[in-house]
Image (tube, rainbow, N blue to C red; front, side, top):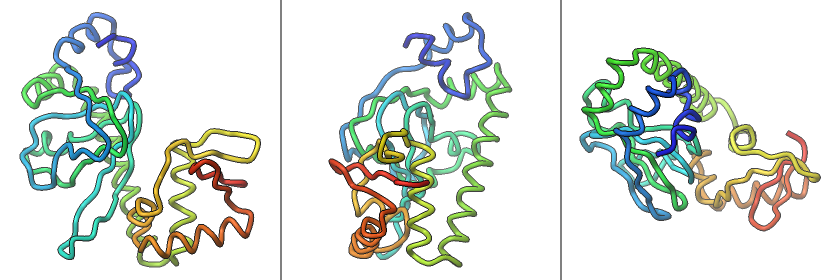
Length: 217
């Protein structure tokens, strides 16, 4: 793996050329097809994953069999580190939303990396803190906000993460299905379809070639 790619990950930005060279020797690449499961909740954690390209869904399944999407992750983000840090089972399931290219570091090598470069642990803590904050915001939204308000928040979050400015507004560059929006918002696909049509009529969003465009963030 070229060193310049590794430097794009927040975990490794403080490393020098020699350290990045050492890091490149302990990583290997995996490609996952669209909709392929990478691992399931409850499995033993044996590696951490870094996203070179693609879109990854982190989700949990409740007793009824219904999915709740916790977050979508894209290029230069990472996942799978929690089970390695506390030696517990995987706390959520992971699926490739589109063909995704990942870098993988096995448990033993990753733990050795943390011992050698403790600053990586600090960056993981910051990332986990941000994810906890996002989880708390999700809980508050589910408790106190209407479905339409929750949809607004999800669209704004997607625009912040994957938005590009265009003539019509902010384009969410990842194609998200109605079902996936429903899983993120915590409602049904039929409700999301109805609400999106309302937002289109109100001039808040545009749908163009299956991309969502926020006219005014």
